[in-house]
Amino acid sequence: DVKVTQSSRYLVKRTGEKVFLECVQDMDHENMFWYRQDPGLGLRLIYFSYDVKMKEKGDIPEGYSVSREKKERFSLILESASTNQTSMYLCASIAGQNTGELFFGEGSRLTVL
Amino acid sequence: KQEVTQIPAALSVPEGENLVLNCSFTDSAIYNLQWFRQDPGKGLTSLLLIQSSQREQTSGRLNASLDKSSGRSTLYIAASQPGDSATYLCAVRTSGTYKYIFGTGTRLKVLA
Image (cartoon, rainbow over all chains, first blue to last red):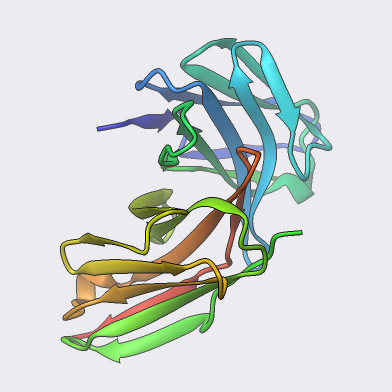
């Protein structure tokens, strides 16, 4: 079974702190995603990576950056956390072929005070 | 621009009932459509993936259908159980990209 692991399930941070959210997948998938999920707004794509060191902005990249130094690991970085970044963050991955299935991690609930 | 709609937003049914969840999308040029289940505070669990060339997929008590021409997919759950209570989301993968567009989900409650 594909496993997508998000290292932190719950985090509480203060405004202005730098926050790292880590995601690791064990199926050698080329493509990895970071979404945030908010009530009434659904899932929104923050960033997408299609290969090591390659990334594309999603729909809401402002205030975020990403890092993909190794194929299995995709990190989301909040350079200076703000209260409007309080949310559920979901990492996902998919194999490179066109017909692949999207797999999600368990999510990271971030609260910024 | 692709838009995905799920109606109703919430549904309560008695245990044992067969039920249908709906997913509509505006652009029929899709690669595939995927149904997910989400329990409170958790990530999304993949239920069924339907390729654009397929009409339906089945897994246990679940059956998902796809009608691209009308922009609709349905998830059929047979003999519902309290353990089926969760939010069900559909996601459409846009042709030519790895971008997925998600519906906002249907929150299902199966009453014992």
